[in-house]
Length: 29
Image 1: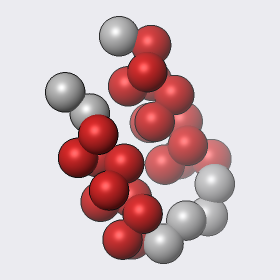
Image 2: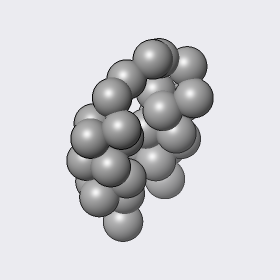
Image 3: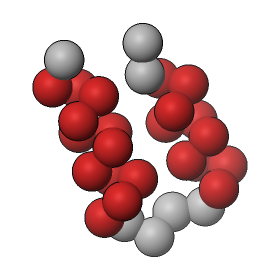
């Protein structure tokens, strides 16, 4: 699903906090 790729790119591309990374990973299904 493309949404997971979007999340993965966000995790890789943007400098975000570990907490936000964890939150984004929980959004993956």
